Structure formats: structure tokens, C-alpha cells
Image 1 (cartoon, rainbow, N blue to C red):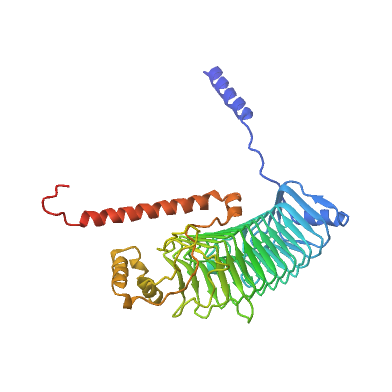
Image 2 (cartoon, rainbow, N blue to C red; image 1 turned 90 degrees about the vertical axis):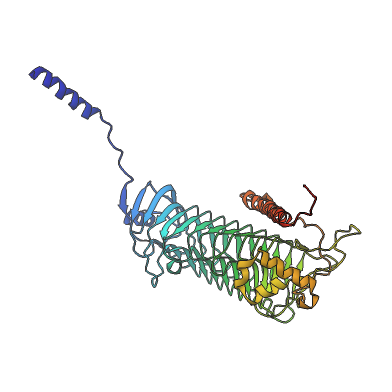
Length: 467
């Protein structure tokens, strides 16, 4: 018995010796280790960080490139700003930066630059109040970063990317989720392209920032896609604003802006595709909306009654519940809806093109009685696509004196949808919105067929007809 017991104990002992040991986690060190590496480096050199977690708050005061190689993690331990760049000429790349403080008054950030130019690229930001914050950092580059802000209520969040008085900055190929805004304050001559913003308040928000180009950005599932306020000479080309349906729910909003060019964009399934408030606001200034797809929104175009001097040409207004209306009483007739004999496509246009020139033979003059009622009382949206809506429109057709004055006049409506947003269709990740557009058209057709079938089944069958 003793011999067997010894054998069993020996087997257990050998098994415990042979059991694989757990690999140690990433090495955790104080951020002072990185400070020492920077102090030892020559200005302009590359400091390559060993893999590991560096805890605490880092201030960079020497112009070096800090390269984390994708395996260096800076952990702020929930206190203050994790990395502050205090000298021009710094590059920060390949790092994960996480756990800033959450004190709103202190505006803690994952990465903050208080001078420029600097380059912040290919980093991952996690659990941050503010993501990347530039203050008076002209000529900087923010590129290829992934930013996730703290999971706070929307009113408590900070901005994913914020620029303050930082001119000539390039912001490109960043992905921001669950932030407040990407916001630009008093910053001019910016290039903002190929960014993606989801689950936030405003995707791109401009305040007093001029002479900027926005292109190929995707703003989806936010409260507002793009909002331009008091900002002039901005061009938006080939962007996608999709399913922005918060309290405002604008795909694109303009307030008191001059010299705005909106071209080749897709504004799909928002509460409001385009909202205009007093833009342009200066005498002699115009706004241009050309070759945009504005489709499947509750309201395609919404503007304040004093909106004027905008030109709309070759846009496709497709299956919006209301193609165009005002925010209050009034019409949009102080704006131009055709240029050089070319107007816009309206999916509810009932005219013909008998000569086949691609232009409708009669002007587009929307006189929807239900639409006018909806403008006066938005709660009536509950009855959209119901028999009540159809009854009201039938009554207006039967009694022309009930028909309202036209909301706008397009003298040269297009008979077929124009080809718009070709660059959008070719852009990476564009299949989903284009598929949604096709699916929406199909569902609309199915819905119409279903409604027609119900109406036909409801008709009385004449006597003697066995059909």
C-alpha cells in the first residue's frame, strides 16, 4: 500500500511540474521610464518604445518621434490628460492611449497638443473624455487614429477631435465613435477627409472656421451629420450623411454661412436631409447644391422662410416623405431650382417628357395639402402613408381651391434621376448605403403594390361577375 501511495504521489508531483505556466501579462512601468528615454534622445530622433504598459501622465518637451510600434500602452489611470505635447515637431504614432480623467471642467484628454505643428497618427484612443485636442497647433496632422470616448451620457462626453485656433491642419482617415463632436473652432484652411464618425452628437461641427474642404467623410448614426455655423467658403464633396436621427436629425445643417458649395454628397435616411438657416447671410453671396442624392429622409430640404440665394441643380430628391418645406410659414421661391435649363429630379413629379429631352414638359410645383398641414403641425407625421393622407390629397385634387401655393418652383425638372455621387459609389465601404438605396426603392414599390392590392380587394364586385 505504501508503494502504491508513493507511485500516485509521484505522478501528481510530475504532473504539477509538467503543467504549463501562465505567461506573464504586459510589463507595467511608470511613465517616467519614457520621460528618461526622451531626455536621452537627440532632438529629431525616433524613440522606439518597448512593448508594455506605461502608467501615469506624460509631457513631451523635446521634438522627437515617439513610436509605440502598436504595442505600447499609455494608461492615465483615470487622472488628467494622458499625453501632452508641449513643443512643436513631435510625432506620436503606434500607441494605445487610454483612461484619461473624466473631470469636465479640466477637459482631460487622451492626447493634447498646445503648440504645433505636430503629427498624431496610427494611435488608438480608449476610455477618454476628449480624444485628440489641438490648441493653437497650426500645420498639424491627425491621421489614421481610432478614437473611442468614455461611455458617458451624451451631455457629459468630450469631443473626439477638437481644434482650437489651429490653421492649416489635415484631419484624415480617423474613426471616431461615441464622442460629442469632431469640432473646429476658429480654425481655417483645413483639409478634413476620409473620416468616419458614428454614435456621436455632431459628426463634423464647424464654428467660425473658414476656407475648408470636407471630402469623402462618412457620418452615420449621429444626432447630426455635419453642422456648419458662422463659417464661410467651405466645400463639401463626396461625403455620406446616413441615418442621423437625433433630436435635430440633420444630415447637413447650415447656419449663417456664405460661399458654401455642396456637391456630390449622399444624404440618406436622416430625419432631415439638408437644413438651412439664413445661409447665405451676406448680400451678394450664394450657396450651391449640385449633384447630391437626397433620399429616404423624413424631410429632404428644410429651410427657414427667409432663406434665399441658393442654387439647386442636378440633385436627386428620391422618396423623401416631404421633398422640401420651410421651418414655419413661407415658401422657398427666393431660391433657384434650375440653371441653364437643368433642374432637379423629384420622385413625386407627375409630369411627362413627351419630347424625350430628359426635362419634364411642365414645371415641378409641389402643392401637397397634407404637406402644408404637416409643416404647420409636425405631429401629423403620425399619419404619413395612411389612408388619412390619401384622403386629404384626394380632397385637394377634387377641390382645387384647397390646394396651397407651391412651396417651390423647379422650371426644368429632370425626367430621370441624374448620376450623382459617382466617387461615393466607388469609395471603400460604400456598398452598404447604395444597397440601402436600392432596398428602399424596392420596399417603396412593394408597399405601393400592397396598398393597391388592398384597395382593389375592397372594391364591390358587380353582380353576375364570378371573378
